[in-house]
Every structure is written in structure tokens, then in C-alpha cells.
Length: 117
View (cartoon, rainbow, N blue to C red):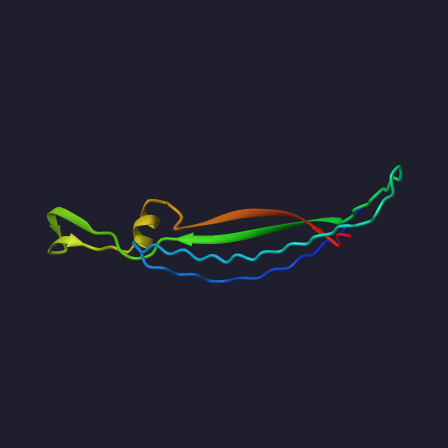
């Protein structure tokens, strides 16, 4: 039995400078309580039934990471009249036959209960 299936897609962009540390977080508290009270006479018994619906949420986050900027190079013998050169990271990666970007996928699974009574 399938409880629910929700699909969607969204995107966002985040950029920070090299050497800077940054953290972003948000906390949201979600809670529910359920209970029952009854008075019993000596010898009496009662049964309490608590119920809730169980659900699951799975989110896949896709990141695209790539390098940009220049590489500092110091040549013993001058290159184009310079001892120091700064080729772009793109050209260095291409000349080495390397990709300059990588896709990283993160799957977040969350279990939850609703309609507690």
C-alpha cells in the first residue's frame, strides 16, 4: 500500500569565496501530544488506544561543484618572458584530460508520524 508519492524539482545557487567559512542552518520544532484520562473505580480496567499515520519523505539534493580561477606557476626558465604565469584552472584541467566539475548527490530520508490521536 502506498501512503503518498510526491515528486518535485527545485534549484538554488550558492557561492562563497575561497578561504571563507560560512554555515547556515534553520531549526524547526514540530511536535504533537496525545493522551487520555479516565477515572476508574477499584477493580475496573480501561484500554487506551493511541494511533498515528506513519509517513516517509525522501529528498535527493544534487550539487554541482567546479573549480574556477587561476593556477600560480613559477617557471625556472621564463615562459613568454615571465617566470610567473597564471593559466586558468579550466585550461590546466583540460590539458590534463580532467573534468572540471563533479556532480554530487545526497539522499535525505525522514520518517514522521501524523494525525496522532
